[in-house]
Length: 213
Length: 213
Image (cartoon, rainbow over all chains, first blue to last red):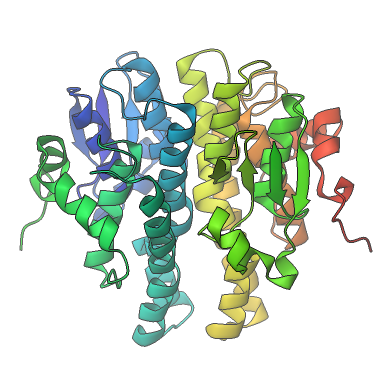
């Protein structure tokens, strides 16, 4: 398999975590977002949304969207699982992943931040308030969700798809100075995840396209 | 089962479509978003995100997030399926659903539109441009995705989770005057869906809490 992605992209980071939790080998092919490679004609043929990541299967099929890619990996390589054992707990884990993917990350994305500043002329103060209201507010709600389901990880005592979405969102939140002071459960889970080999392997800083400094 | 939702909410509409495609009976309990019922203490206990819908199972378990609810319904009541037959086509259908849920709907949501106008002081013209750039742009990309996979519906010739996400997004796009002129494939699929009993049953106008006029 090939993973086309970018070291600091949250969605790419999620998929790297799932691949690492499953112990799957893949060829990592950087798409440099700063150079606009995601909007090049060749990449658009693989991913019309001009977003990373794209998973390319051994049969040459291209899959976009981290939620869809991780469900595909789970169906195709079911063990070890990144979903809990019962339908209700699977729903709880997927709900946390979806809350992060649909309510937090869309508003933390760099392209939206640039649009706020460059197109809407929003001040730095108003942008900071926006980030704390939307992606920050969404994580506060995820904290409440995790309080119901967490053991050592978001849902129970094994890492799942929920943790694969949480850890990149905490990473992005710190990068953009989003207030996490009301998320002690999530921060404790993040700290536990950071010690696991799969999460270390998937970390942005440990990718070949990482830019140091 | 109970579905707590709102007639015009896109996410509630998606779940109603999936329930109807599966022929499942449920008790529909309106949550009046205009009266702020989603932020009341009782509802927040069920759904800390203060979002609709929430599915309450017969065992009293509460599930939030339309993607998680529909995957739960699919696992629990697998036939008729709302997913295609092969892992790759399932991934393609989930990718369309996720693209709509993560890139289109977050930016079309009424609460974001209000924030743009009331908090950021954005003009009507700039808000219209925002809607065409973000939720509109996302649907243009979904058009390209669907061009690869569509038969009569988004992926093949049976309605799937992709159509359950598409039809509410088209409904919202029309409501907010988002330009759909570059989405002929999606509009043709929407028209086919509108003729099916499951989609008619799920339509906002046919809910007990619909406000006419």
